[in-house]
Image (cartoon, rainbow, N blue to C red; front, side, top):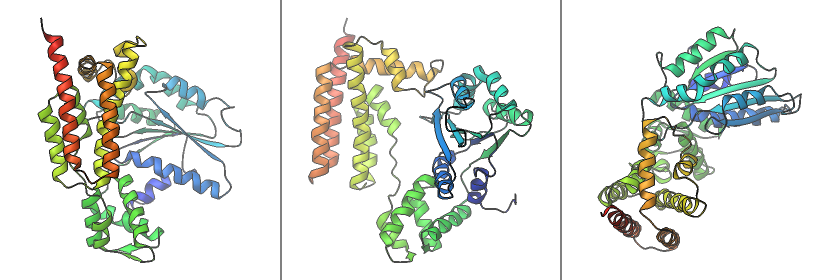
Length: 381
């Protein structure tokens, strides 16, 4: 293939049924975009009257032995149907340079022989795509394992890095995506779009779809259109908020909220922020019921809630301890009351002009009053 081909042309060729081999290991910051590309491949194949099945697997849900057994089962799909089986490594919850090393040690090496045996004699009509959503380089055990497998598998496995393209490459991709939609734009508008949405291709594609709908019959998308339609990134870290709720302080939670609100988010962004807060409280309430009423061990509940965390990791122990302490800090009734309060706030956010910041901050004060009061009582001699 020509080295001058745009990244989006090269990626499309690599995952086309005509070029797919028995195995493909995909990695890089943009590996998540592969999901969208694979859906397009299946749709295109069906448009040609070809049957192409797509089935995802997640390594925190199924191990390699189960997946490879299904890959080798002749009755999994119709005999005449080609199959793309996509195996996803867990998405990282936080920036952890050791994540890939641990993923290899815990999720790959115990099944090393099974994986090697499969690629020595892969199933006919089955394409196995393995996706790691992050950077890898030579010297990393995960990368080195699949590199060795590629060398020793007689061409049955290829590697594809989906890294973040350069700005000029992104501009070419934006122009191509707009051309498909019958639109065009200017370099200035593209710069504004990248400023708004960043470099994540999935988010950029969503914004391009919104811009195309907004433009209607208008063929040219302007810089003003981008300013009117696109959501500019906000410095809200949902993991930082969860940390504050679980083991941090009211001051931390208010500071995170204040920084978010200072960027003047629109209504949908405020709803998303509140949804993140609600999701954590709801999961805490469900866990409390399981632990106290169903007598399920805290550790077991925590492992189901955080399947991406491996038990042997240091982070697992720290998170489990914080989660357990937070769970003990509330009674069932207190959590039920907080969940009902969340429902009332959600209704007000969506149906009134009341100040969202005040409602969220008031709720945070209530949450920490209950959490810290109970903790203080538990810690008394």
